[in-house]
Image (cartoon, rainbow over all chains, first blue to last red):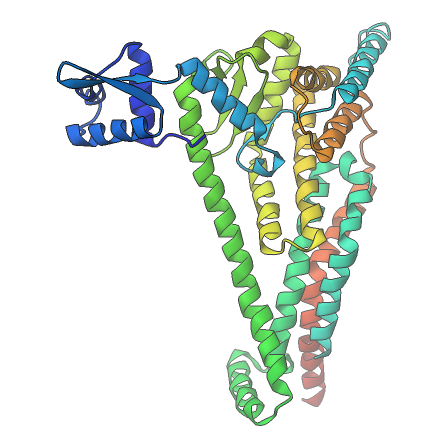
Length: 128
Length: 313
């Protein structure tokens, strides 16, 4: 999954925010409340998003109506999966709290933790 | 000549024996000192070879006569060197070690930093697109059932957790996770990892650098665990590690990560007694000795030359 470019991200965010199909002009109007983009710029980027299968489009009247292929939640899930799949080699970029473990190893560690919890409480409330 | 050989021998010795530091138990007892030790070893290994090259290029015995004389002696020796055939390989070797080696290492560091920065920028953008800030916790929350907690360092650093994490963890566990990630960001652990990784990039076949990088990754986790254990009790931090691991689908897990998490948990549950201050001082002294050895070897001819010059006067 390739990450979105800056303008691509802004356009996807706007499409998700609307929750309904939008034309280039709709998106341009929303984005230009905070910046000054040319119609052709937004059109080109939305066309690229279509080529990358991030949005579908259908001709309604005389304009293309664009709609995200994946919902924001689906996109989030895919992104997370990507992030989680990245191994420790990415650690300078992103530091996971915990890496993946084999189930039997996890079970052993859980036992150890529970034993420590039990051990700590009756011993007089002092934390270990 | 002797200095050059001694320096090269020092470099080789560190390359061969250095990885053994991974077997030392004290690094998990004092992770910060452990990271510094790996940095000292890797830096010294490179520095020894660079200095070996320098001693090949500069007739160092004349340093005592002052800088102007060095250039003069340099020019003279270069002029005479073209006449003698045996000096040429030495000069070539010196140029490679003193000139090309540091440039190569620096370029690898630069590339590592730039690629990390670029990837982080992409990640920031991707995450901002799908995450909502939780101002109370000071984190970004992604609405995904799969548990995950991580931080993305950088100028606009972020801690990201999923809703799956928020629902699965008890309050003290969550506080432990957040303190752990905040410690990574505050201490800029990513820089230590990036530096170690840059050396792997520079010398991918040398075991010292691979071991140093893997150990650095492991030790920063221990450091962050210790920081988290100052906010909540150690058992809660250990419990958070296990809780998040329990919910992960077991995929092709790396052996390193396995040992890593198990070590973290057992270390949190049975904290080692703090290192004896004298032992700590001794080890820190050892680090300085490692760092200074090449400089001393390189400087020895200068020193002896200076002394003999004094004797002549």
